[in-house]
Length: 567
Image (cartoon, rainbow, N blue to C red; front, side, top):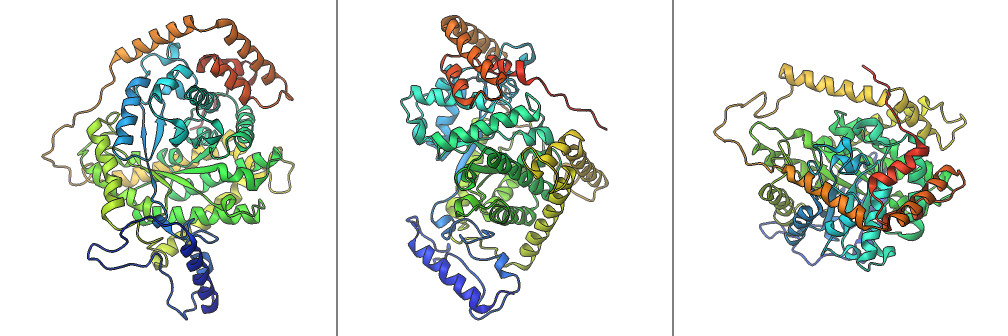
């Protein structure tokens, strides 16, 4: 039990840190003009059982947030995920988002790019520009970010299998702008574990991908310290059908695996761990989602300190981006999706998200139109500017219901962590990287993760079909007066023009320089002591080697991975 003296001492520590921190110039009163405190806690003199697990904002275990000021210090970053068609079209959308108040960019790539294919590859036929932007080489990155200063714009890129080549093209484009690469700030997803677990967009077997990820972690820690080389993603795990607890546990386990990878490379946990960030889903069950976010911070802080020896606060922090749940959107009565997105976004904010993307009402049908993208952006701005939710840090902290949900979420996650470690042979077995990593690799190969998610998705679908769970417009309140919405359609001309452009660029580049760069890369890939591959991939990107060429070159040695079918 936390005694009244301990709680009082914590309040004093928080107050000192709050007073010393920078705050925004803003009105922190209610709509009626009532002043509110920056944080609330137990009444003076109260003894609260378990309060040390709740604590104060900005203090270990960070259940109530990373900063003593909450959003009074700075609000969450509005980072709208966007990409479609070709680089020029997406560049126009980025400029619209930034001019309308977006705080950073988040790049959506098309399926060929996500799979490491060029736009003229046979597997790319019919897919170019449809679920994101087509990027074949650094020249496309030049156009994608034309007129957008990368040194002063935080950029997130949602790509995992070919993440390192795509990142190197981004670096080469930034160089051509005259940027100081050491000053770049942003996030690269790179999370290959979740691809095997849920999204299925890998290029090679797990071990080669882990080699590339280790190289990237080393490179960023040494050369681009503000850039986060890994965004550990629970979003796609949840979208595949996982429960909130599974999303939490599988995602944090993946994060622990990457910590083990960094330690196995001899990196200092206090140096590289701040470069890890997370990406969660904000689903429709309001309080469960808030509890999930709070439990995530608490678990991560405790494991980083007690298991991995992180001593700095930044190495113990779990910083995360949130996207509202795509699977909660319905094609039926799509205007209802505006309400769903607003509720989900509010749960992310009350859970302390660091950045946020709000889905558009038409995303279950097609890529967002400009109008629906603007509504999604305005949803965040209404929450930020009108509702008062940014005035108080963790305003629901101490709620009996929320704290019980948070504790239950943490306990379920710990049970899953133990199962994962056992699958890898347990703590005492001989592990190449670490016990959590061994368990993850075993769970990938034996299909455990996929089967767990499939079972959860099946149970939910059964509940929907029985009517135990309800979705407005789908299995209840199905009558409507609203008609169809206009949707964005990608013309077949996008693929034709991109393929033609790619052919011209191949003809205009220095072919000998490209081949020499690819040959050097292949030699290093084949040599276990070949050193860090990132500089060699960057050289190939500077020479205008295409994404497909770089990925195929490494694939000559790394090989391919085929998942065992399981039913």
